[in-house]
Image (tube, rainbow, N blue to C red; front, side, top):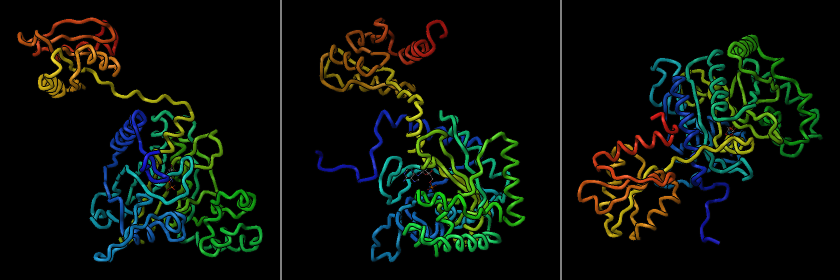
Length: 432
Ligand code: AMP
């Protein structure tokens, strides 16, 4: 047993799995650029207040799962690690006066989030999210743009059978009446509620609706539905979202119980699920509109919408559905040599190849040429560059390891020669 291990609920991401991460992060960044979302980076921690106001105090995320940092007395400020990115991004939007930029401001951020949750499969204390936010557009067209972007990401990542579950949770005009009605509904059935739900009832009845407790299933199915009680403006908005999704050919399922755990959501709320995945308990991504959040954090009233897509759960889902793992980028060339002590010569040659854009490494051990060649083959390198006596006349050996062929190449032509031969490797003989 090692003395130290990664903290509970966290894990080390190791090669070759990290190749998948790199690929997904690139895909997310490329899509974000294509859709006009620009990168933002906010700190991994914020004043606790940002999350307490911005996420809501009566949420699991703040109530139970916030990683609070022990205050340092000289600062007198209380911080917490970010459990989700939206509150921090909105804080930055206000701080930097982004309301004076052309609206909406489209932003994207990818990075680790932290929740002090009970660790289990697909639930970690540190996990990664790809986040998209459009601040300053009331929708409904942009709601559809964002949902479509989410589905495209999953599809391009190799996940078929994605389901969008969709709801509208109203706004400050219609939601309070609905919440009062919902509270009355649960109060009348208080004895049937599990203890935790009884406790939540008086503080935030909406939270009971998305309870995963099986004891709540029947009660929730019969509960009053927000979509039947939307005010006219919210009902129009929701109809607009559906019409735009229909126009884009994005399928969705209406889910009246979908309220999401965060207080700041208004109107459009959605989650992404993998169809047919066991349990269907865990969303692989989710988002929604938060028209009240900018004001809540001290800015001018400004609408916004976004999503957070969990990378960890996406990778689990890809593995479960048998999607192929991407190959790791290979080492193209390994520089070996007949003089074990001449690490300078090998390192210099490898450095020149890398400067020319070739993935190369030098064998820096002091072992015999035969051993160096064996190691290069074990690494699945395509070429061994052999530094020997011919170096005196400006030439090195270039061995094609899989083919077992070898020739002498002038050092000045080496990079070009490797590129040419590598192209033949990639595309098959005859096309280079
Ligand atoms: P949420 O803000 O809770 O809806 O989270 C958005 C997405 O982040 C989820 O759909 C998951 O993909 C991912 N996620 C949330 N919490 C965790 C966690 N503890 N471990 C792994 N992924 C998570």
